[in-house]
Image (cartoon, rainbow, N blue to C red):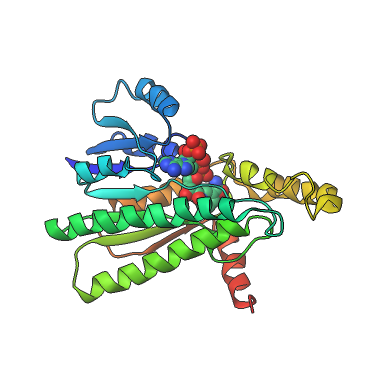
Length: 257
Ligand SMILES: NC(=O)c1ccc[n+]([C@@H]2O[C@H](COP(=O)([O-])OP(=O)(O)OC[C@H]3O[C@@H](n4cnc5c(N)ncnc54)[C@H](OP(=O)(O)O)[C@@H]3O)[C@@H](O)[C@H]2O)c1
């Protein structure tokens, strides 16, 4: 039975993906951020013998629990929402977003890839974002972190090819989905003494438009892609959805300069 490890899997997209995978022939290591979340998921999955719940804060030595598992498939899903105007945020908050979304994730990817190379097989699935393709005002810390992750993973994949490695690398790039992640990130810009205080009313209207018209309430489209990435044995690299958000993001990239 293949061993899958998924990080930051308490809620949102990962939780929906686990529901899809639970009947497949996998042993699933569901890892979550905090002890409190661990208590909840131990109850949630107690009837499933093929699920093991663990607390793994990817910023800490907890990562060693994942190395001990020596997974066949690693899904790097954990991320921190990084909202707020670049004029307002502290460098420490920016560092925290980078530490989580880029450095901790990449340390996991690098270490697990080395284990997989030794075994001669394995798959690493990295959850990035369409927000890594184009910067979005008031969430640029997050966009920068996902853009960095994308570039590291793209370079990593090219290097693995040069040594004829059998380790498959796949990247998921979701658009806006209503998991609560965006709400948390958008609200971070409403800070006291913000440079943008006079714009708050307008910005709130913009946020409401995103919640109403852009954020997908059903996660099916992207979870289907994530499941495909888990099950497939081909070399397809990028899995993006929904298409109507992918197209403007790709066009937006052309006009960045
Ligand atoms: N929702 C969207 O619109 C969207 C769009 C594009 C990409 N994504 C990406 O999809 C992935 C899943 O996001 P989601 O929307 O499903 O939201 P989510 O349920 O909040 O998932 C993010 C998870 O990461 C966990 N996390 C944060 N810091 C961590 C750490 N140091 N160690 C371990 N876990 C940590 C969070 O735990 P806490 O809640 O305890 O912090 C949370 O469970 C993320 O990579 C996100 O960037 C989401």
